[in-house]
Image 1 (cartoon, helix red, strand yellow):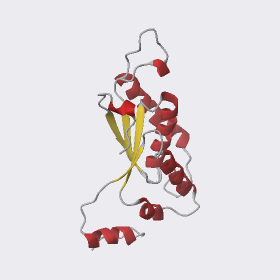
Image 2 (cartoon, rainbow, N blue to C red):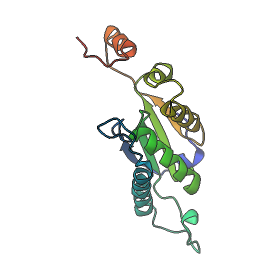
Image 3 (cartoon, rainbow, N blue to C red):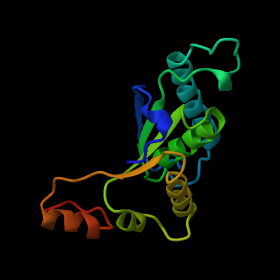
Image 4 (cartoon, rainbow, N blue to C red):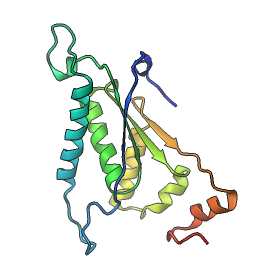
Length: 170
């Protein structure tokens, strides 16, 4: 786990977990329903709301948002699935660039090794390229890519890794 020095100054983080539907950008007829701008705006507004609620103390003689003291950093945790997960990470990375690494840390959570997880995406699709972009970004600025350990027996875990059709486990 990579922590910036600023993450270790006795500041307990406010942890927000975001996950959602994969088909958030499509409608029931599998046609693109590009409401991503509206969704990004909502996610951004929510993260900014909590940032301002938690860090309303300004440094002496400082009034701008960027000059406010970070009292409680936000740590955003999200999966990296297509749809809502990747969208929320993208918004958080933009906010991190705006507010600074001390204000927000992003932790991408993987249910399996990245090499296996990538098989869930269609090669050369927009979602695949978005995943690759987010993974690269999570390796910078004190962010993190975390593989969640499972409690499956080896045979069940292998089924989960190999089953690209999401069949029921028998």
